Image (cartoon, rainbow, N blue to C red):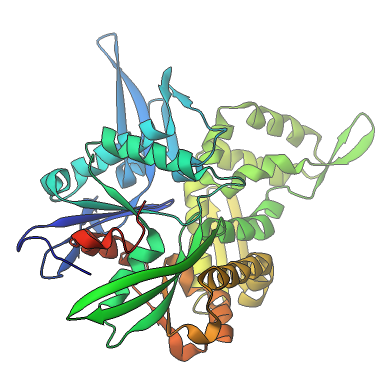
Length: 439
């Protein structure tokens, strides 16, 4: 049952996401607001989960700096000094093979990156003092990203990283559970809810039973399941089918009298724009320059090289994301990327896009089936399906749920803030911890 905090007391919800992080505050009356961030006169409620480290030399001394969110992106794009850009590092939380990364000779483990990110975020956030003393709930995925995620390791790293940033008394909640709690406020009767949470790196599904007794809300988790397929996966499909062939994938080169296909491994970095920055300072770029000299058609590879050398990966991925979003509302949409002499123009049909992501959508449907099986409930036992996350607007994904549950049971939230808002509201309730099996 929900026992609210003292009147006027604020609580905090932190939705630490693969692509974006959102912070929400709630009071005992149930009013919720999302913290805004203003950068270059643009106000946003989402804070990109990104870090940029750089060095400056003054008076013969080296000074190290770090920025996060939109400030990190600006520094990466405009900085004149040596820098190291890191994005989507949440994806490595459960990876035992990721031990550390070196940044200007300093050692950074996952928890160090998380702590650095949260410190800078709090510096930029409105109401920073509130985060330091208020009860905090932090979201976590049902299944962490990666081929063989180590959940215990991920949670150990989460606790160490947030504690290092001064958030020492937080509790952790499954992200779709928090979204369900936010949605449940509008329920007029008892209901069993399936929450579909589509993030940047993972998609999570939870079945939760909500009941009201004596004016109080009871929530009982029945089952959940998750998978490492989400928005980033769909972007990667578009890049592989539309962008990579224009940059040389599938073409050939001559070596020692033989005609050979270009190795696909060089195009893997296109799936993540910050990986292109890594290519710029590694052997791959030198290899591409050499291959371009031997290519039967060198022009596509030369365009690829210019994208890497001129740090155009961010602009490229923004173009990909814009096309993906446009395809949610139209039967076709243009993909347009023109920077300098690099030009990629193509019209993409929604039918083609849906055929490219079909294997991913099938696996998402299978994961929904797993969540229902884990809950011991059939499709008929679901009263409502609540969607949250950016990819919830993709028609092919919505159709999976419409086919199973009917459109009348589907409800769509504000795509990016419902988890943080639910977390903040849950932090108002002392006695939810046991009933919702928080970790």
